[in-house]
Length: 414
Ligand SMILES: Cc1ncc(COP(=O)(O)O)c(C=O)c1O
Image (cartoon, rainbow, N blue to C red):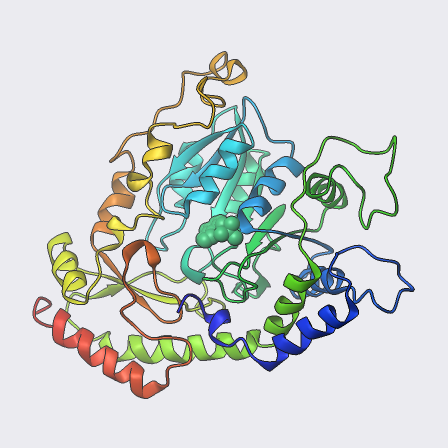
């Protein structure tokens, strides 16, 4: 089973989708006075913006396009650098490449999210944005990152794909960045199989996001807008069917988060006395999504042994999330042979060509080598490991899995 949202798909989502199918209006635009137009996408945009405490949302077809739209809205492009963690899903980095700008890989710290000290060290005159990725349901150090962004007059983008529903020191995730992206793919807190959204408080960024996601149109396009399109856009629209599923899922968010948090707390309490076992630092224990419990072993050797015996691998081997394993990024395998954006003169006239190599982020490597993820509601498909529990598992299963973990890890942690 992929993520938590998918586990609880049920009657609410079915009724929402049937309402749309029966109305036979599957498209995000419609006439306001047409009873068949159920306004599901508009409702979703409104609801997510409201719960995120921001003014605007633009629903999209994926989290990857959400990041591309965010970068485009900020006019980030050739010659620009964006700082991004070396531990993230590859889409955070790919979106920067497709915006024709240069990803600058930075270290993560014990939050497994951007290390503010390394971010500050990597700011250059070419930096246009910091992309804070909230990995595994836990917000990055947003106060520090916001302060660095403000000090250097660069934008802060929040990649909230893995953290829908979480908050940071009382503020909803996505509301601290200038513009933020969500994913609703199958592994996320709530899902429609695929889908995404950008949210922002800035009207100009909203207008630009909307235009990018739909051929240059202004919000809720009333016609073809001839003469008024600010730039060339594409089509990343969400359908009414996806939005219907997500509205059903949204109503279950509190239930999903409650379950994840209870299971994680119990799992952690049952193993935390193991000598030498440490855990990921959580920036806001009240606000995290609690989709994974990340353990840190005293050494890479122990992490290797424990994870293998549990049927998985240490986090350093994650095929989807660790820069060392992203050969297409390391080798700059661009879709066209001239190597744009890495060879782009707008960049190379200002700075030496960017290079990437395995081992370039030693702090990140040392942390991931020692770390083993336990699933609370999201397995890591990149590790082919799902040791842990599912969302709908009760505390009895949590206790069994914790006992199994103790039996294996206890052999090495003394
Ligand atoms: C951190 C992060 N960013 C971006 C994405 C991209 O989202 P999507 O799969 O919806 O394109 C994901 C998806 O897994 C992700 O985990």
